[in-house]
Image (cartoon, rainbow, N blue to C red; front, side):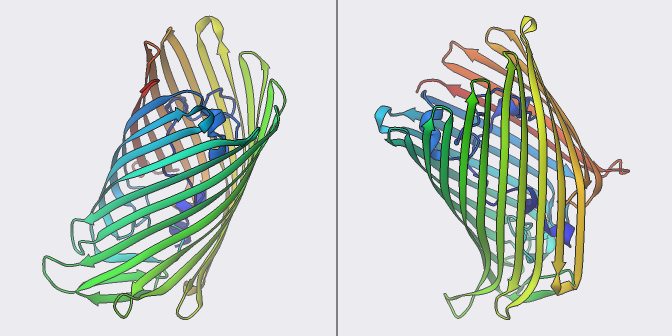
Length: 487
């Protein structure tokens, strides 16, 4: 169960911003980033650290971007409660408006639609969050989720060299399962962040930010077709679950968290820069069930602690050559208990150390940019499942190579391509061993009259355990971005 439960929380920090825009150029180049010169890949508190205070220094022009996207996921290599296939469509609108001495404003709005096909029993939007509990019924069916989201960032210079910023986001989704138990979901995210940045010298910048997150998922299950009683199982272990049977079953999942982060940017020379960010996050998940009318009873509680440190540097020895590298360390600790009895159900921890390096070189006579990244991850995870009297410990080394190329065909037309190849000794998400990963992507960009820029990318990815020909997970994505430099 350890391999199936320890999933999205393994590689993603709890506070990944859900309104962050995608960079189609980096995606079209296969994801290379260490030696890439890109305006959205700078080592500053906003691009590198996510600090909203530095927006006023990062964005100097007015623009608006419209981004439609499509994602398709399918294949047999998956966890038990993952859907057989998934279609995800969305469109986002992002705009930046410098306000002179009054600061800089960025606004976002988006709408997303998800169709999850053949979901086995699971009723939660994110069943693999690292907690020791699932909410399930007895059937396999399709889920539909859709809803809007909005967000904004405002940055202002308080004093000469001292900047502040505020970021907020809100997302609402409605979900419905098309078969018994006809589960209805109301899912909402609220996120807020306050940041400060101080420019000590031209080559030294310090940043601090604090973030709050509140996510709530309300579930209501009832069998409207047969008008009988609904059977719901709250699993707490591989062999143990609590059982509910009544006309209507209501449950609520509440997640709250805080994150503290700091950033340092240091540039001792014009061709050399480095950045460090450190993050500490606390969060908890509560499973709440109605009791005595409107009163809610806390049935289970899960606690998470995250520590993250990252250092990245870029060096430009020649005008057409950039070399970059990264070191990062992630530590995640979690435990889950039954609140009523105080019984500890599950305890796990993860340690991940990453080393990466890359370079890009531009061949001027051909207007051709070539890049390569290499990344190695050392992962170790331990799990103590007390409710099942079970202990697991796994470790492994993961490797990934990314290649990217960009060719300027005409003055305002670019062609891009990327390819990545990797191997995981241990896949903590899906539980496989010696898992091969590969992906290919193509893209293009055109500037129209200096007022409009259009980007496009499409990519395909595949992962499969060694020795399995037809047992894989596949992903196709396509996206476009229309940027208007005035509106």
